[in-house]
Image 1 (cartoon, rainbow, N blue to C red):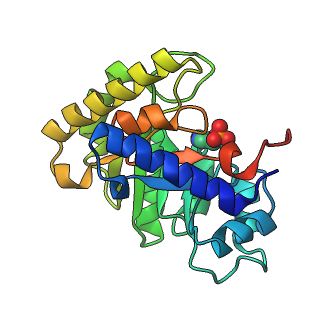
Image 2 (cartoon, rainbow, N blue to C red):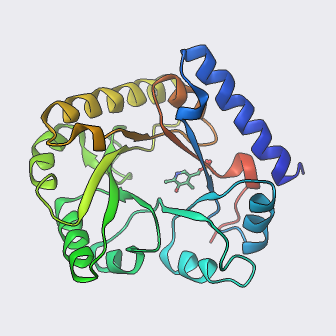
Length: 232
Ligand SMILES: *Cc1c(COP(=O)(O)O)cnc(C)c1O
């Protein structure tokens, strides 16, 4: 089993190669190390290897890990990348710098209400179901533009971009990444502050190179860094 340090280096090199091939600046792509189901010790190992941006998907697990003695007090940037229900929203505000998995206006409204109440600000991404699979979360593509009109008005929160989880097969995935990029472009044309709306969180262990080719600004990689996950 290769070390976490070696895994991180390998992914960074592959991001660079894909970026160069696409004519993009590799520095415009951030690697989120997805540490869900992995113990704090492994996160610490990645941190000690120079990586400080991590994504977690399960609320309770995240809340426990962030205060683990191995990690507490370290300058770690957390992103919440899992699906977030309205009743869980208030627990992540102020603890993560970006929430990726908002897929309903009602959840965004609750995020706004709770951020306002806690006197905090929250940045988030809208999850879009580009694969059309009914088992996946995410707003339907054809609902995004009209939903955005409402999302743009909600106080104390800022929509920073779009996120998806693509289909397993490569050709479909590439196509879905491209559509997500086009959707972001359309959104920026109607956004009151387009400069705030620039993130594309797309690509995982199996498909991040395609995502980089299609304009990902953040990729979320778990298995290829930390190894396979056990079932929860
Ligand atoms: C688990 C997860 C990932 C990482 O998946 P890997 O295939 O292990 O890289 C990325 N994004 C989300 C939303 C996840 O839940």
